[in-house]
Image (cartoon, rainbow, N blue to C red; front, side):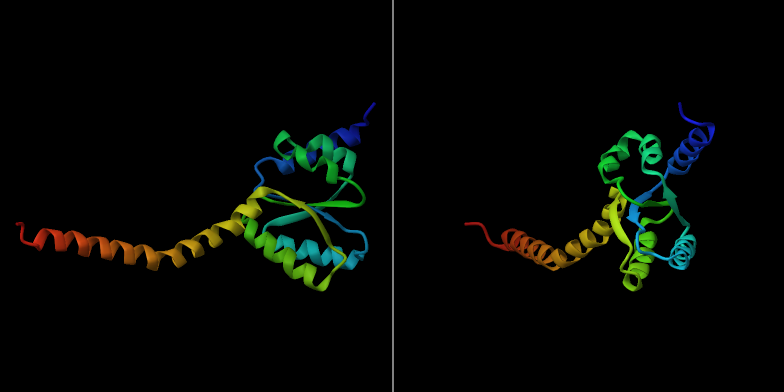
Amino acid sequence: MPTQEKIESVEDLKRRLSGVKTVLLAEYRGLTVQQLSDLRRQLRSVSAEYKVVKNRLAKLALSKDLAGVHKLLKGPTGMVISKEDPVAVAKALHTFARTNQALVIKALRAQIVGAIQGPLAQLVGLLQAPQRELVYVLAQRGKNAEETSPTT
């Protein structure tokens, strides 16, 4: 039978996970208490939090759209949770991971991937624009040439 403390922990985690834009699982094995404090501070600066979770309780708290990460909840696990900009969270984690190689990212929610893909899609659009404009100009010149040519 679950204890009241565990029930409250699951409910607290469910509340924290409701409406999030970013959920990321990271293994903290090998990080010192000071390094974890630094990580938490950096994440707070981008409106995110790092919470060490018990894997069994995290599985109970995860909603159905995040159920795919159940198999990754093994070993010492922490969750990065944010309801704000996922790109800022990714940048903060990248900055921290450069100096602390012990941080291992296990999984991240699709919004981060989407946030990264958005600017890349814009770049592809910009790279295709000159060709698209050239085709448009040539089509207009061809149309104008047909209109001005004498009919026989």
